[in-house]
Image (tube, rainbow over all chains, first blue to last red; front, side, top):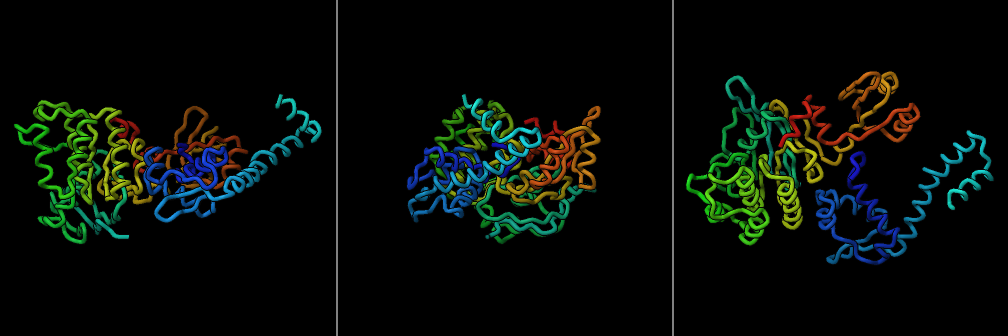
Length: 117
Length: 295
């Protein structure tokens, strides 16, 4: 766990990552908050807060008496959200820095291609 | 939310020393509380008052809505695991586990047996002959298996090694998750238990100086590190919790920064680092770090 951010946010992100990677597919059951608490060695109230964050966003939903499930289409929704974040956190600063150095977008594309090899 | 404990303006004087000094706080049902503070801060005295083992000089205590003093109706719902529990001289561990069910209505013998095995407790050995860690383990087993609606652990881990402490934390979390109850954990090892706690009470010189949700306390401060001039320029008029300097470098702890402020700090060439619960408490109580590290 990273000390600088609230633990419940990190729990929510961890579940999001597992959904994006396909580890938790749409419509499958996710571990209970008590299982999350035991696994991460955190207070169950903190785990519940993390799970509820995803319930509020419609990523998870509750089946009464059974448990928590991944909403149909949750993965697509998360990928869209993370793509927006990716633009804001990486692409825009990249373009700004490139402009500062006088790198054209053609040169930038070329640099990315080179790194991919 | 139901309050299990309500304390108002509580003071306990020993001669001219106020071991607990006008403390006012509540403890709500089914949460794990951390009661944290330096040695001699008043933690044990406070717990003794809450469990009716000592008399208050002034103020009021309500536990399950009643005074705990000489009150069987309240005390039968409390399990208090003391740092230095005394046992009769000829007692062996098995005697403790045989008598415990007399006092605790929810005592779970199977759970106790499981814990005894996990902590590798020698049942037939005289307690007088046991190591400090084994005596502590007896307390831990009693505290967990008693499943009292209100359980106090006062520095329960003295002499316990890292493996045994982790076992204690794991079993506490598991059992608490299945059977929610109110737990008050008093400890020096703040970093070890930080993630287990839902609420934090910090006592310093008899006064409650922090009474906050653990999650909001966590990350409520940031350390700014860089050249002294850049740090001071950035900190400006903000409240400084702590300041360290070495050569031309400075590290200053201030309240949490928002995103724009973090970016401003990065632009100014400053490094930001997280402040753990333990460091935060050390800084707020002006304590040397050493006091919280020794088990």
